[in-house]
Amino acid sequence: MAIAVLFPDGSTRHVPAQLRACAPADDKGGPPAYEQVPLNYDARWRFARVTGRWVALPRKGSIVVLRPPAAPWWSDIALMRDGISTVERGDTMVVAISSAHRTIRESAA
Image (tube, rainbow, N blue to C red; front, side, top):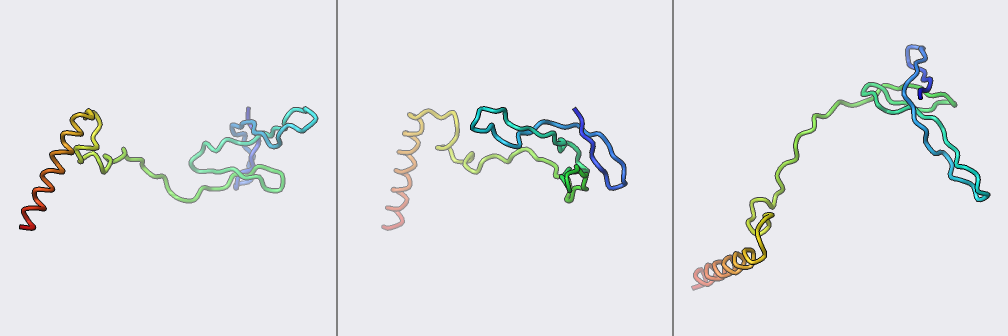
């Protein structure tokens, strides 16, 4: 399915299109209304309806290179790592609290 789009150089080109619902079904049980709209597939052009016609407009901005996500901030904290059982977490927590309490007690003395 294609739709005619007017480009800035004055030419009309057929671009891929899709059907989009423009109005829901009415209360009388009639079918919903659909309209044919161009797909925004091109990195150089975006499509807008201007006075009833589809017109291609140049995109503004630049392409962003996607990077893999960084490791979560909590991955360095042993208690929050995946794969540690609850027993290990409990033992680690008790040890961590005991050593912290001991350190506080020693610094207070």
